[in-house]
Length: 475
Image (cartoon, rainbow, N blue to C red; front, side):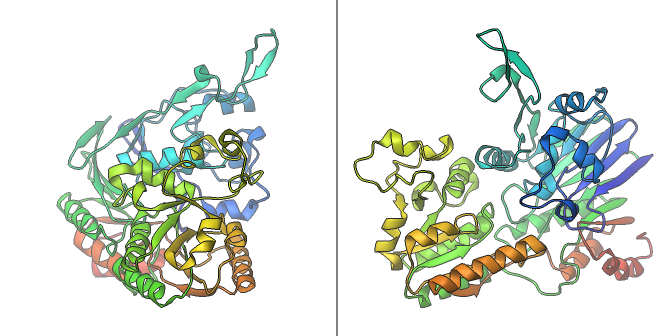
């Protein structure tokens, strides 16, 4: 018997954690963070406590309490027994937090199947992020002591290599079918708002399962999603686990339309242009890059985006030398102080940032201030403090990201608008979603034609009822 348990992503957008069981083989489809559940109890200034191990996550239903899947150091710290591994693999559709963030808590010997780009992005998240729970590529044992050179005990940290464990990533390529216990697994790339996204076809002797992950058809890689639908249809699935983020939307977005609008807005602007966009959406970054180039302006990126571009290499449509890299003032703010030694300046920055300080294409806020009409700047609330150093004149802010969907985001939006008002910055919007419209989802379901439809990643599962009525086979 095939058992499908949706332990996250049922009646909510994100938080996907779907357990498949068949003849003793157990797989998770994604292992992500639920933003909705998390925001019910926690916020920017109130987070789950690491000192409780998994306790806060179990207490508030953020993680399923299942034996044999969680890391030994957390369980031991909590005084819970460490059971034998009970999970054969995680199939990871992409690197967004609502699908991948809680990998941090899993045993490091559980195989994780994903694309090469997904692994690269997760590596960047671990290296450049500030999240306490970010052991995504490897894991450092917590709550452990070692004997120091003085004979006393010291707490383990990442300087102790013997306590670092590499996670068991297994990169999948298109057209490859892998066997995991009693199931066969095929990865099929799809178009989404970051590189490396994919869906999966899982083969069993009791019927096949198709998992869409997050999917759209209107990005620069829309042909991948259309090919996915074709492959899924040929698999004649018994079950279709289908995302429905925008089930209530009839509007079909277009990434090309976003590029054209951004280009037009840049052309009309007499000063500097800031573009607010998801930092890991390389498709959007490429649209902004092309729009800037069309208007003979340089695209300026923050260090986190620069690190991602460099790491993705051929998975990114432009290279690190094609852009300018913004060196912000940090810590002591020594970057633009004359007579300060380079080694002193470097101490203001994290190790991963220092490689960009001496690059010929790096710029400071002072550089941007002197030639404001020459630049289009990637910007977000994380970097908005730099606007005070740039001191823009006749500037434009283009919001190229989703609308706020929680109270915290609404507060951030109000703060941002206060900054824009203070500096007299005009505000425009140009955005396309990372998800297919409701009509496109319905069309995809009809074409794949499963026996059983399981809506996930949607707050509007009832909107799928008309599809079920059109095809009585769907349950």
